[in-house]
Length: 102
Image (tube, rainbow, N blue to C red):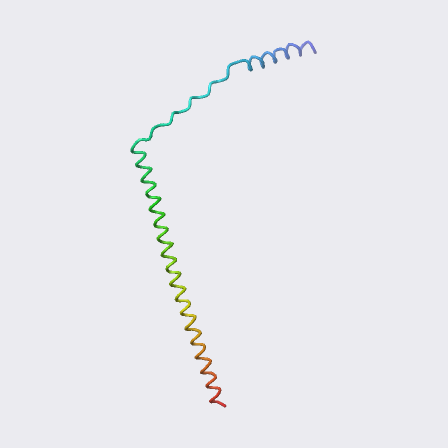
């Protein structure tokens, strides 16, 4: 059995050594950076312009919404004041009625 292992071990070592001794595979060449064409630059700048315009539209909507909220809060405040005034009038009327009824 040892006689069969020796040639196999010897062949395995020889294969490993030859693999380690061989030259490494060359790395694939890197592609050089392609220069941008004027058309590509124009397309990219138009895309950026669209993004900027969309952002400005969003900003306008935020400002419009904030203004509506401010106006709404003013209406709520006015409504609460009117309700309070109405309750005061109702209370005074009820008290006046109770006074007359006695």
